[in-house]
Length: 384
Image 1 (cartoon, one colour):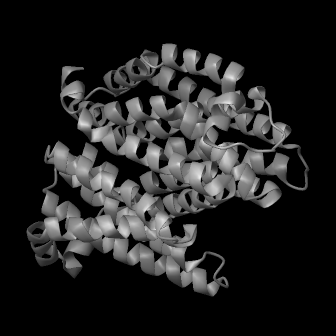
Image 2: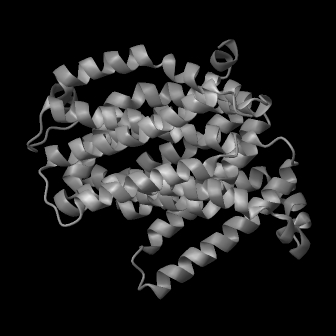
Image 3: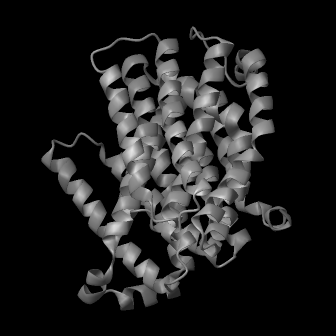
C-alpha cells in the first residue's frame, strides 16, 4: 500500500482524461461526446488486436530483455496493422481509416508506456500518459471533429515517446531479423490477444448496439454515466493493477495469484456499494450538472449502467491474471460463450433502452459468475 501511495502519479492521467472528457461534454454536448466515445471504444478494441497484448507481456514476463520485447512487439504491430488494413480493404472498408490510425497509435502508446513502468520511471510514465488527455481538449478547442482528435492526441504522445526511446529503438531494430521472427512464440500471444480482443469487442459491442439503435446521444449518456460514477473505482483500480501484475509475476502458485486478485476486489466492495447508492438516488441530478438532456432515462437506468461498468472492470482486470497463469484460452472460451449467447438474444429483437441495458447487465453478470466459479475451483484445489 505504501508503494502504491508513493507511486500514485502513475494514475494522474486518469484524472486528466476524466477532466478532458467531462469538459468536452460540458462545452460540446452529449452528441459530440458520444461520437468521441464510439471512436475510442472501437479503436481501443482494434489496438488490442494490433499489439497482441505485448504491453501486458512486458508487465508479467521477467525472462526477456526490454530491447528484445520491443523488437518482437514492433514486428508484431507492423504485421498486424498490415493484415487488418488489408482485410478492411478486402471487405469493402467497413472500418474508417481514422479508427485504424487511432488503434495503431493506441497500440504503440500502450506498448511504450508499459516499458516506462517496468523501468520504474513513474513520473515520466505519468507525463506521457497525460499527453493524450490534454491533447483531446486542445484539439477540440481549435475546432477538430471527433474523428480527428482521438488519433491526433495519441500520435502526438507516440511522437515524443519514440524520441525518448530512440536508443532503445536502435537496439530493437538491430535485433530484428527473420530468425528473430521465427522465435516469437505467437501462440501464447494470440491466445491472450484473442481473449483480450474478444472481451474488448464484447465491451465495444454495447457501444455499437446503442449507437446503431439510439444514436450518439445515448452513447454519450452511456459513456458519461460510467465516467462520472465509476471514475473513482477506475482511478483506484488503475493505481493498483500495475503493482498487482508485478506481484502476480513474482508468485509461482496459481492459488496465491488468485488470492491476490480476490484481495484487490474485496477492497473495492465498500466503495462500489457507496457509489451505487449515490447513483441510484441522485444520478440524473449529478449528470445534469455537466450537461442537461431530454433523454427518457431514470436513476435506476443509470444505476444499471454503473453496475455494468463495474463488472466490466472486474472482467477486464482478470485478463492479467489469466495471462499470468497461462490460462487465457479458458477466459477466451467463457467470453465467446457469453457473446454468442447475447447475440442470439439480440438478433432480430427490439428492446427499449431500459430493457437493452438490463440484458447487458445479465450478460456481464453471467460472464463474471463463470470467471468466479473457475477461479474459486483453482484456488480451492490449489492447481499449479
